[in-house]
Length: 510
Ligand code: NAP
Image 1 (cartoon, rainbow, N blue to C red):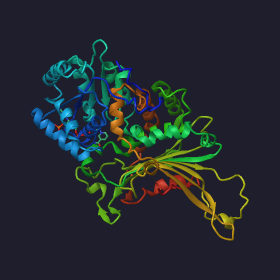
Image 2: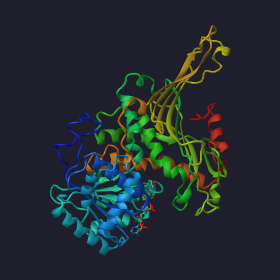
Image 3: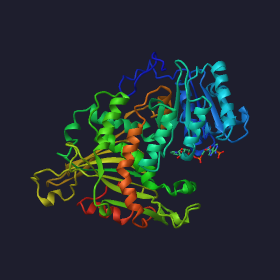
Image 4: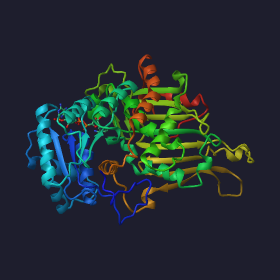
């Protein structure tokens, strides 16, 4: 049960600083606490929440893993992770209070370990006042999601008593295709009811992603333009400049489309394209996303509306970097793509005829995530061709990272005695407009899960629908040979450029 005295729906209700969203009595168990994600993101986020006073006094953090760590050794490990990764200042009294509630339970995903964990939770409920309220964070390889859920059920830890709650937080990737996602959903939902399942898509925890809702639905300026009447096409880009590095083993067999497009990019598409929800309650918001996902399909033929690639050696700025096939742990024969692009269409009155171009890749020109709505040309141009040579199409660009903000591109007269029109940018930057630093996505999502606020977590239906959009593309690629090469530091394979050129368009160079 949620503590109603402090519960505020962050998307719906006024953020009253006198009424911060503080989690009620609770604790969290992290499975996979020794892993990369926990060390870099989860543990620092938990400290930052504690530092901001948003965790309850008796908050208890239990790490579960295959080390024979004492409480002290676990504390030292967490301290190192937090001091290296926290966003907020290290404060001794905050750390000490948090560390008091830290424990480590040694175990594999077998019966004995979970029985020990169950005993630990019962003890904490008495000594720390966690009230039987536990969130289980599954930060383990996806192959183990089912083992952990099964063990939580067997040991009686999945079921809450009385007013208390048990929730499970699950990391991506959620399935490998629609069928495996459905199987996994069934398995998880057999142990935890859907309202207790929080699937992480950390993009939804980003302030700029939530700003899409503010931009669209709090303003009068944009909505009239937000449709096929004025929008020519939409480009959604998530480009990384890094390569696979140490993650080659994880990535091989997954690839860019499954790793990024199925979750982050399709969620961005849903937020940009959905209708205004009746309210910002989780149910209403998710209902609108589901509606738009149901109407979304790949454009055909897939031979010309999609592109995929693998990076080869090249230059990233002044650094020469190696190609994918030279990366340690990556099978040189692998057909896993590090670049994926596709064209989607949305069969609705608002978006009929507007292509949504999605692309993502590693070792691209620069690290950037953005959504660009590119507008049609004016129906009549009173200026001569020579006067508008430097005028492109108008655009609204929502920059998700880095340099979070919104940019508008439009034509303006060049100063001087002649009439010459060229593109200019009007740029809103978050960091310049607001003095407060944005919380990290994981801070927001962990707090929301503790507060039972599920608006920013994709439902089982959303996950399965995203796979349904992507599956035909993945199947087509599986039957059609190798991805094309592209040099590191460029913007992907030539086929990605051709994909747009065929439609008389070009990718933005962000
Ligand atoms: P990782 O570094 O490989 O860590 C995996 C964790 O699982 C380790 O703590 C490992 O413990 C534990 N584990 C594996 N097998 C186990 C077993 N049989 N019994 C007990 N513990 C076991 O993985 P990660 O990068 O942290 O990723 C964790 C999850 O988050 C994955 O689902 C991944 O897809 C997802 N994710 C990660 C990132 C990221 O940036 N890293 C981003 C998005 C999503 P040992 O230390 O004992 O091996």
